Image (cartoon, rainbow, N blue to C red; front, side, top):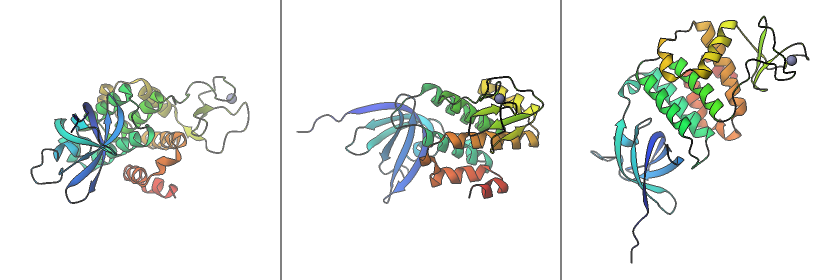
Amino acid sequence: MAEAARTYRATAIVLRRINIGETDRVVTLYTRERGKLSGIAKGARKHLSKLAGATELFTYGRYFLGVGRELDVITQAEVKESFPGIRRDLKRIAHATYISELVNSMVEEREANYDLFDTLLSSLYMLEGGVDPEIVARHFELQMMSLMGYRPELDTCLRCDKQPSDEEIAFSPSLGGRVCGECGPLPDDVIYLSNDTLDVMRFLLSAEPQALKDLHLPPDVKEELFRAIRWYVRYRLDKDVKSSEFIQALAAVGTGEELQAEE
Ligand SMILES: [Zn+2]
């Protein structure tokens, strides 16, 4: 006798999808209510499948799932936003992929984080709305690190707790923020930041996504931010994060020089 299958609904963003078999897809969803989980969408690649659009990357929607033995089964979905503006632009696709991979790599399965979900969704809307993808990504990285308990220290020296002079702003990605040269030799990984970059970092740590629309940054500030935050993020990530998907996503948003530094 068949028992009624257990089903549930979730509001989610598609973080990743893998085609399997002839027509199926395994989809990693970041759900608002239950955190990250995977589900199989059967027949999603069939012509005219209702699940086709709903299982594309970054799609935001409402998903109906049945509890399966190994994988839950996505039975139905309603697309709320498919982000056509992101899909039209390679740079936006690269950055949306990157922030999705970052979430995928950093969160545990089935651990909800409403703030992180909302931040990811807002970031996708900012990308959709034409905000500079690099700014969206740096903002997302800093917000995400803060939400995960890794807010970088920008005001006092991490070793001696004193306020360093702003003449030499030394940021250590491995230690997680600023250090001064008074209390000892600077760590090898120190990245020097300009006052402008430090100000932008402070701004990004506290800014609502909507505030990014009016932000324009010169290339040297972007470059410093990219180096400092990117290494900071990498130090806080687990070994798992060196997944090929993450590295590819990172490479797609980096410069050639950064790519080589990867090896
Ligand atoms: Zn110090």
